[in-house]
Length: 211
Image (cartoon, rainbow, N blue to C red; front, side, top):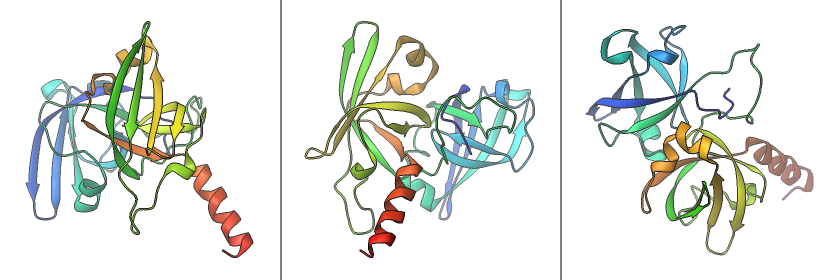
């Protein structure tokens, strides 16, 4: 379980691809490797991945994770060396809970369609892909002022447009400095996880109504 509060920005230093998936090496990550163990879970741009190797000293501290084809299909990971990625360790039992319940199970990707400065803040608008039978629309789980996870960061929805399949968030100046999302340009993709509470509520209601 994660909170969506990003701890650190790491850098993709290597991508090794084969028919079954790929291995990412993420460097400049010493800040989150102090208590790391093989098999630990780290949310990488919102995807829960397992540490397979790590070194706390070399390349500013690096760790490796394996991405199966399912993960590559659901996320925007595994494409560009040099990308900065949002990193968060799994939540500790004694830690304060400052974000929202994040599983780091990415539902889909969305595309940045608008960037608008608002004083020191930045407003971003995203568009979801057209729904399919295999991947129904996520819009029923999105409400203004509700939670959403974008590239692993817990954010508040400022607007939802069901007809255009679009939604918006605002990043204050502090958040812009702490996460990679503020650097995303129009046309780039981001990883989306909707609030899991909404999923459970919908399933319970459908089961109760028998439809």
